[in-house]
Amino acid sequence: MNLTEKSPVTIVWEHWIAGHRYQRIQPLKPLRNLIENLPIKDIDFAHRICRVIPSQCPFARTIKFFGKPLFTIPPLCKINPFYDELMMLRFRAMNYLVEAGEEIGAYC
Figure 1 (tube, helix red, strand yellow):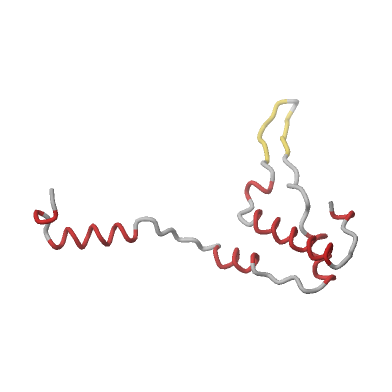
Figure 2: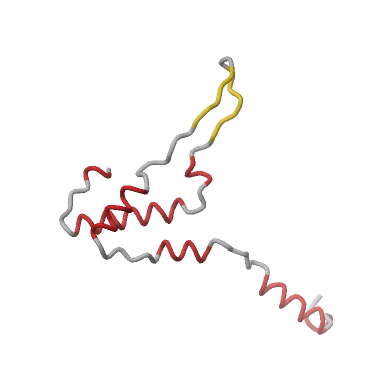
């Protein structure tokens, strides 16, 4: 079917669908942007970030009953939608501390 065989309504409808097909609703996007753009301007704030955000993914556990596994709790980073943003924030805080001449050995 070429362009002359399509009705104007069909052409408009296909154009509208093509323009809106890949739009996704992202309700967490504003909070992600807030975390990504959080400025680190103070050494105490950078130390606090490094203390609060763990360096590794917290535990994964297998719950057993009489030696048989009932269920497994996945690592919490797998279910945290902000894990990547928090790791980048922690990295930026550690980088700030290194540039300020602070010791970061306790946070590694």
